[in-house]
Every structure is written in structure tokens, then in C-alpha cells.
Length: 52
Image (cartoon, rainbow, N blue to C red):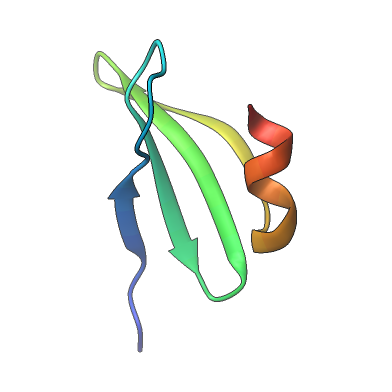
């Protein structure tokens, strides 16, 4: 079974955003204290345009 791939998103943002990759889907999230705040979940071709 393949696991998720998590990487920090490069750029100048007010928070440190990360992306989780699983197949053709992506989740954009950031960490706040002990919480994980999910910003967007969707297909790869849509997610980067819609979350910004």
C-alpha cells in the first residue's frame, strides 16, 4: 500500500502551507497550534488555482 506524500508549498504566504498528495488528489493545509486546518481538497488540476 502506498502512503501519502506531504511537502511544504514554496512561496511567500502568511502561513506555512503544506500539500498532501494521494494519486490525482491533493489536500492543502496548514498547522495551527495542535490543529491541522484543511484549506482545500480536490483533483490535482484544480486545487492549486482554487485555494489561493
